[in-house]
Image (cartoon, rainbow, N blue to C red; front, side):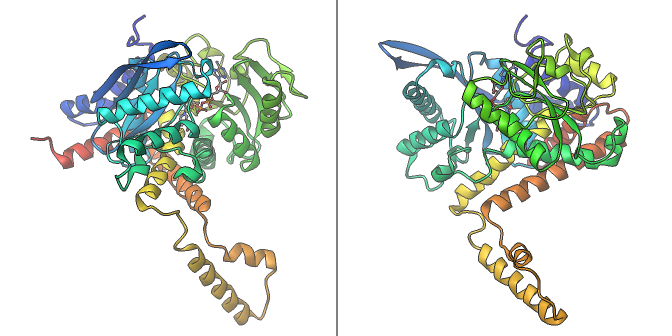
Length: 473
Ligand code: NAD
């Protein structure tokens, strides 16, 4: 099977694109331009590993230049190939448009299994990859801004920043060349949790939308809903803990690399993460039953299933056995296009990746803005706001002749910190974008899935850009 066959990840993305394009009146040439990947840099470079020299294969795909910079994570995985990177870059273009982040889509990949290398070797690979990007002008705060993805995190982003500074340190905005950096290295508070928190806001908004929950025979509100999660990495663990602590859901099943566990009375996700850190596995977590195969949790009866591991996890092979009423795609591309048809025909609401996991890129956008402004959010207004609120409270107390408690005073008079502003901006983004998608889905009966609706939203915004910009020359 070629990588670009109908069932491949890129094939799925392209099929979904074609389907949604049919619902728009966008001219054919513009659609072709939106679909095409604008530029791919495919590279090979040598890295000294122990006594040997290894040739590393890597990519950076810039899918769309209709807005600049382009933006997208860097993935370290032995499965990386050109088609996968292009598919992920295309998703980034649509994702940014959906959540009104003014970037084109991009994605990077280094074909290595990061667990096979020492920290020192990973640092050398990352620095050499960054140097290749600098040489070809494929990185920069106004050009292309990478971020973490599968197999990478704040540590790699700090190495990328440091390498960029080595060559381009005199650029005043150099810190904006990469996002997802550690907070003390020009990062932003709330970036680590952003994708999981975005998943929470998105699913909460869906459950608060009466016409949405009615469609799948559920009652309104997230509280008390049963949830199953696949993957307890960055995205899965924040999604699970935040949905549990702030949303009041009951997580009844978890699937990880080593297997699936189940407890109908609920699993404490934070304690499970701690348990896995200590034992290396989720299996045998007290109170849970181990299911008979690795992916068995996906097939549990539940209200919301959240795949948060990798692509192509729900395929025509297992789609028929999925019993969830709502599937929230926290991972990129966890459902193949064929499998989605089966799920949609069963009446399952699939909340698509390019909307639901956009919290990461949204907060990356905030981080980039912070880097360009060279100042922490909240620094200018926090005290001013706090003083104003104190005066207001004082005025109300004077007028009413009553005093409020110290706790209430503290709550009412606090100014916003960076983390408060980041969360508030993310919440606003996820709520507004959901309603845009839902409005298309509800008002156009020919649009049968939320993915099609999300694509229509994205395509219309991007084609508007082309219409307004014109075609050069
Ligand atoms: P991660 O490496 O932190 O975690 C992935 C987890 O999935 C790991 O715990 C791994 O053991 C587990 N896993 C791997 N194969 C599995 C399998 N077959 N069954 C069950 N579990 C399995 O990666 P992440 O950053 O959490 O990314 C997860 C997904 O979310 C990816 O598709 C990624 O592209 C997407 N995503 C990530 C971000 C982000 O900000 N990190 C943003 C948007 C989308």
